[in-house]
Length: 232
Image 1 (tube, rainbow, N blue to C red):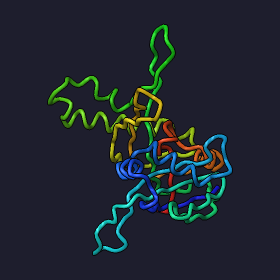
Image 2: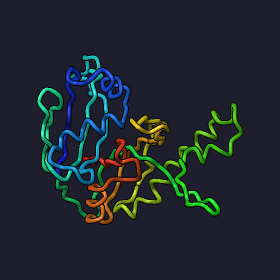
Image 3: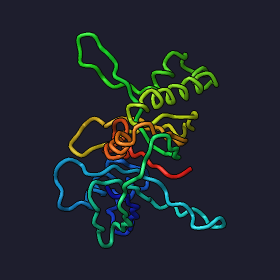
Image 4: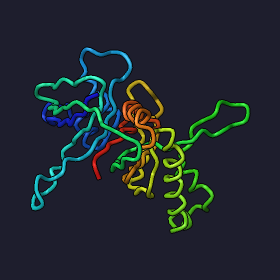
């Protein structure tokens, strides 16, 4: 695997794609990043996460430019005048009991049974919010805590199957709902994302490596699922 950091030369983008990328549009970003793999036309060989570039120093203003992290099964190829790439081989040395700091942007959903129909995916945070009456109750502390707990439960209940456990409750950050408009499709593609950050403990090194390669949850084509690890 290869872990890469990709910067975009905004001058090389069309006006439409520029606005979409700067607005965090995941569909446009996905199409753009495909250009890093010119000889591949089968299943998507990468996971990605979009960020905004941080300032170079404490006294400098944020650059506010898009920055992508990519984990791929092959080395990406830079696109002159458009995509600058810094890559390195990624083969983490994992062992049972090792603790690592992690970040992941995930799409937390559960299967919702519907009688007589094929099960559908439901947003776990919206499901936690649903019992609260509309209006002020949905902005109450109790509602916020219920949504936070639902987000935590979604991750912790699946952690062992992904090769790790959560020794402490992770931070649940930005919760966003997305509506992506794909050319040729009348209805928008809708999904949600939650940013998690915390500490994990390795329970099954081989399974965790597999999890890293394949990602966590759904909406991986739209910037979700990339589990990023570092030393605490």
